Length: 371
Image (cartoon, rainbow, N blue to C red; front, side, top):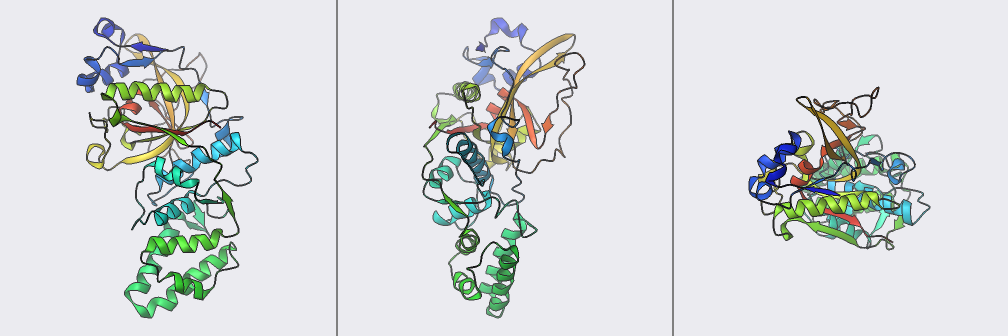
C-alpha cells in the first residue's frame, strides 16, 4: 500500500515527491520508513458527492468568527449522525455550538480550540439546528451577528445610558428572525449582567435555539492521533496517512478532521509543523486551522518528459463554496484520461493537496469512532 523511500529509489522520485524529501532532510532522507501511498492504494474517493454522506452537508462559511474547530466538529458530527443515527431532520449549527462550548469552558473569547475537546463536550450539550442559526442570522453574516452581540454587551457595560438601547436592539433582531417567542427585554437586561460577552452571547443564542434543540448524548468517542506523541515527524506522517486512507476505504466511509497549518492550501512547500510535531502561530504564520478531509485522488503530472503520480487529499475548508484566491488548475497537471479536463485544485471551496505536503503541516488527525 505504501512505497518506502530510501536512497536506492531516489532516481524514481521526481519533483513533487522530491520537494518533500528536500525540505525534511532530517526526517525523510535519513529515514528508510518515509512512505508514499502507492497508485493502487490511492483510488478515487469523494465523500462530498452523491450518494456519500457529505453530499447532503453543505460547505459552510465561518466568516470571521474564529470558529473553525466548531465548524470541523459539526461536519464530523453530522456525517456520523446521517450514517449511524438517521433520520437527521436538521444539521448542527456551528455558530451555536462554538459559542456554547466557549461559554461552558469559561473562555473570555472565541479562540481556536482542540477539536477533540469540542466534540467531547458535544455529548454533554444539546445541538441547535443549522436551520435556525446558519452562516447567517436574520440576514446578517455570522461574524456580523456575533459582533453585534459583543458590541451591544460592551456598550451597555461601558455606558449605562446605552443599556436600554442595546437591549432593545438585540431583542428586535431576535424577534425579527422569528426563532424565539420566549425572549423579552427583561431577559436580555438580565443576561447583560453576565461577566463576559461570551456568557452573554451564549444566553441569547440559547433563547434563539430553545425550541430547536437535539441531544447528542448518543455520539461515540473520538479517536485522535497527535504528531508530538510519535518518535519523529516522519512516523507521525506515515501513521496519519494510514489512518486517513483506512477511514476513506471502509464501508460507510466518514470524513476525517485535521488540525493543521492552512498555509499549505496554497503553498505545498509549506512546513508549518515543528520537528517535534507541534503546531503554533510561530511555525505557521498565524494560520493555525481545523478542517475535514472528504476525498482522495491520484494526480498525474509532468516532470520533463516523464509522467509522474502523487496521491492527494481533498480538504473541505470552512469559508464558503467560492474558490476565489486559488488557481483553477494544477500548473503541471495533465488529464487523467484522453479527453478529460485537467484536474482542478479547488472545487466548491474544497482544496486538493498533495498527501505528504498536507501531512507535513498537520499536527492532529481525529474522527468519531465507529458505532
